[in-house]
Image (tube, rainbow, N blue to C red; front, side, top):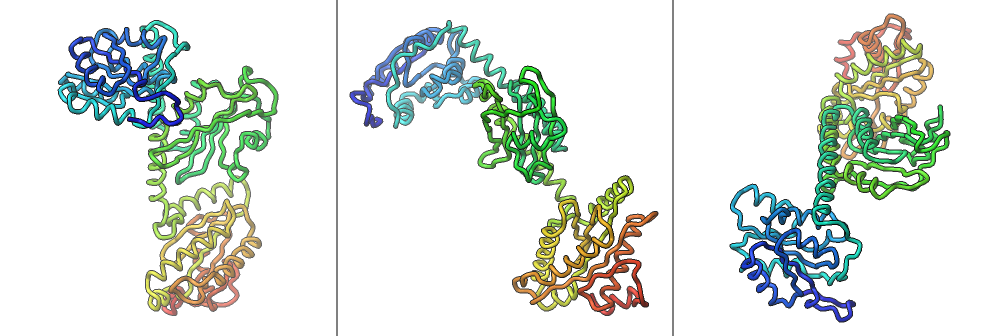
Length: 496
């Protein structure tokens, strides 16, 4: 039996047990088993009587039949679990039913233990001892409970129906897992229908994150989203990845000054993996308990759906990226180049591409092995990614070639950046098991009128071949030929 240190005169004898069964003989058998542990035992012949007894007293353990009259053992268990003041009471369900459906309900009613009556003689006492181990007796009165048994059952069923409907609506978000931004907007639209909070924030981690979706129904600054996002504790570095929908509701006040108030954060998890969080801001009035409970319910239901979103993103990412370096692959890089060229023409901004090729890469593989060669490519990929601007695009074009797309830039500036890139790569730390120094040759080309993506790449390639022919570890710019350059075939024979 449990230790009751610090509980004064309370002993195991003061544990109160409620035995519920519409069969007097079964009730008597259960009572006889439990009397050996000197519990204080109360009997009830129905679920209705059991609930009436809880109006003026409480119990430490309930042992109930699963099949009774109008209020079954499953419903009785749900009432206990649905009341915060009784949710931690140990609950054992007993059944003699053979039907699979009844046994299923018994196992999933929320009880701590589910036993077949034919096994009761051997298993009831060990199960009860295990459940009560470490517990201390509860206070004996429950004056805060009100309502008839039927009203209390109805309230619990209504609560569970609400939970089921919300969970079902969350599962319907599976239709939007192909698009993170759309998913975030739909998820917060659902949350706003359930929660009475002025500000809702959905943070998503995963392969596409972190990103933030915000639904603002309280006051919001016009033309200055940064101030509003900062007031909702969105990290400054993540503001570019925040997507805000403003739908001001007069119920939450007017003006442009965001008052988030005290926030409540509900983690979105699957098992031990944190996928993000749903954060609610209650404004000047704070978050109501009912909103906190509903937000926790939505966050819990979101776990599986968000995991599906991340799996979809990972699948898409695998189709877009190079497995060795994690950079965009050639196919996706070509697509992005087409998009950047179209954007450059629309906005009248400059665009340049740099084709970078590792010098003497075949010799590196031959002398140090292909594993060392792979590490060289990975280190170059990391260095390129760290150095370029946020809007620039780095891709593995093929083999030891890397493509860098410089958006919104003129040729003079792109050449400076390319030279710095080349110098940075030449001064990289030595790759483990590799050569002392790694250098790259760079061919640079600028988008001109009437130039297609294929033509731009070809110009960068020709500039790269010139860089190889003129000594390697240098940058050459398309259109700056000053003397005859060896042919492509000659360059390839000479070695890269």
